[in-house]
Image 1 (tube, helix red, strand yellow):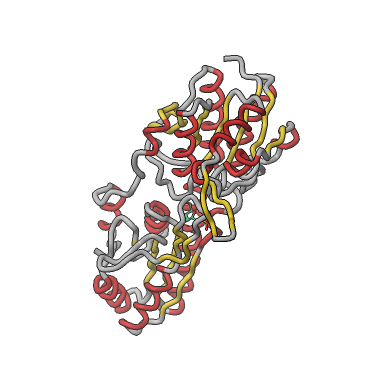
Image 2: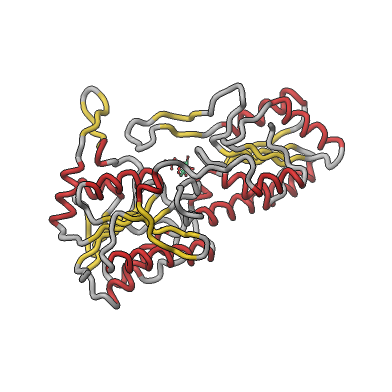
Length: 361
Ligand code: F6P
């Protein structure tokens, strides 16, 4: 297909590697395909409101290693449930036709939607409405199905691992229990990866509900030997007899639940029940900021260039995906059926248990 104008949008929470993907679509499009590239600003919000601008070669130069997204992003503008602030509070309307009209007015041949689960759901609906759309899987949580890994995850895991390493030396010096809370709403990949890489003694993830007594027992045992413990807890982890810890509900968000606080709870309970001196560190958005790792720059570049070639082949309604060694297009619908969660019998869980890590179960 002879592409003339293409659009790029980044949706949902930002993460390292977004600019690498933007660059890898825009550079070949401008240099080899002679195609105009339009940036949609602030995710789907910008598509609904018609906030877009044509990108120049200067816009996409020098951004490969830069964190965030030059286009801006939002996790609040689902066009199918578009939030409107009124006198009676927030209500939602269907603004999808308006978004489609903007896509048509800008004469886009294809829209590249870079995002996570929420972005892929929205992209699938637009694809059904006739928009030429190609998804590119992003999220630090790595919870998108139909790809072996999303870009952004490796960078977040590297930040979390460095934090665990740093906490270990201070934990050991003071003979303390150190709790580190990572992101990870429904999937515990960051906590698991950083926990294994950093040698955490206890890893708590959403997929394996934990028992308080098991945690107390593990830290008390460690206090007699190594005299310190590191606990890596994902924000979505919960006790078997309790609920996830919610920080806030925000109706404007595509996913209204804002998590956070389980690390503090774990620290408080350990200190109260065992008497051991405990400190809590919440990594938060540090995991989403800064420069992408080499792995994410490379994966992002492969995703972006494959997406552009897929569009020039006239194939739409797909998401580019890493399948073992190759990046290939798969139907977007395959990516939104279910989340990619850590399975209890995953090799990494077994490996962690084998070196003595507790999952509090
Ligand atoms: O989905 C990615 C993610 O970073 C989650 O791990 C986290 O729960 C959420 O986004 C935080 O969203 P916000 O940036 O809106 O606080």
